[in-house]
Length: 263
Image (cartoon, rainbow, N blue to C red; front, side, top):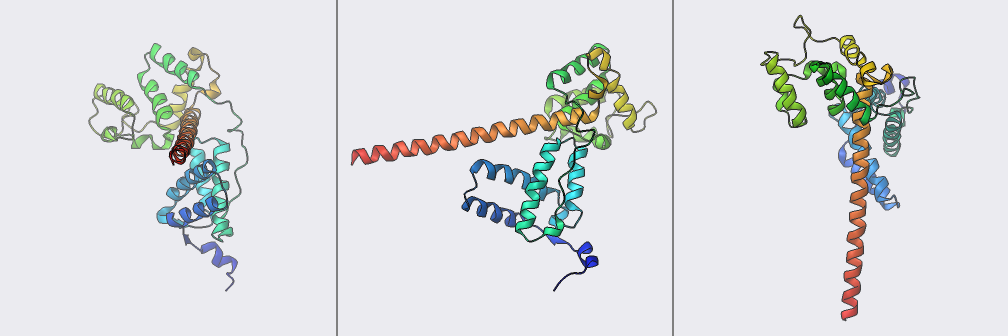
């Protein structure tokens, strides 16, 4: 039965990980390379984990795009992931749930912050004795945390194993110096949550001392640095895994050849 436009707008579907694995297996059977499959699996894992209990509606992919933008992902990464999700949805016959890949905005055309420049920012903050700004810079660059989630970085959360221990240690020391035993680590002088404007301004004030353009000194650029670094590491790991697999096949081939010689 054909669905009306109104019914399609309210339609919801469930996408399971089993469906995704079956799709990837089918791609493998069609000759898709191990490297490409690994890339698809990574993209689709991210997509699947973004779904509220596996539920899909017509705005799901669009919301996912916005979430990745907020977290500072590169435009090229967002496009690749959305394309992977669209291919899966087409395979499942869920064309109406697809979304157009994002267009480049002014934000993406801004220069990227390098790790060397990130260290220059840290040194500038330390040299000026701006401990809070120094730690804010590290939080964005080491975790990719969106600025809207700063209040969720509490004294209690510093024991989260997902938080780099070196950063957690510095944050514990800072909280102790501020007399904080619970609640948000970063507060304004009045004891309220620190505003986005103040966070950005405190980082941008370091631009001159760090020898960097002001447009590179903000939470979004630091978040993008985190995601860019993680993507590069993931790509390197994938390469190493692929090389190890090829080496295994070569060793097995040599072993088979040796056995045939012994016969």
